[in-house]
Image 1 (cartoon, rainbow, N blue to C red):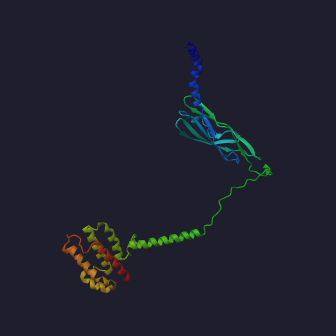
Image 2: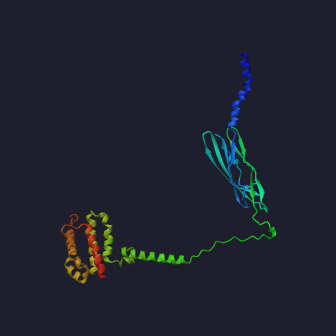
Image 3: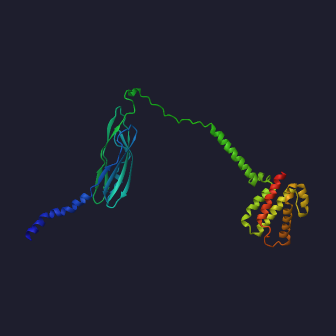
Length: 306
């Protein structure tokens, strides 16, 4: 047992350091550059540099230590710093996009180096990584055979004028057509007061009777429809038209002759619901649909006599 005890004592420092070493190994961050293009830039171009940093779970990015927008050196500015975070099972990934802008004019293609930048994390122990220095190629925008003294700055080109000749005419035609349609509808349905006066009587009556369709079973709505037809007959005749004057009305308006039987039935119906049996329900032989049909036929006769 004594040799075994001595062996354990000799290995005890190593055993004590194993958890620390394992912890340190698990705390090592990984950084990966995701940038694709490193050539073809000219003065004034924005340059996006994407990096992916993987850290152990429990570490957070110290955003207050991220680079701030502004000049980085005499030819390079930081324009923006954006980042996103993705949590996985045992680690956390941060994707950073550093947007630079180049302010260096060259007369020959030249290689420039974007310097490394520190990125810090807080957690069980401080962590810090650095982006890799990034080499990019920048090209001149002035031909090599022209000296600086002979460079002429051109004014910005204005927008190219587009012909608009047919558009005003087309718009005017569409507008005129829309106004004509609106005027016809306003005249037909009496939407405007001066049009309402010129709308034919039976057209006005039909418009109002249609509004009563949702009250087909209501006796008062039915009587209103009968009154509307009476008013249309009165306006067409030019006086208050009663049943005894129907023949003189037909003689003055022969287009209504084919409606003699329906008009006689209508006057008999009116006498029944207003005088003979004012409290009776809506007659089964003359529903609201029949009044609407009579009104439509009167409109046709109205148009023939116009």
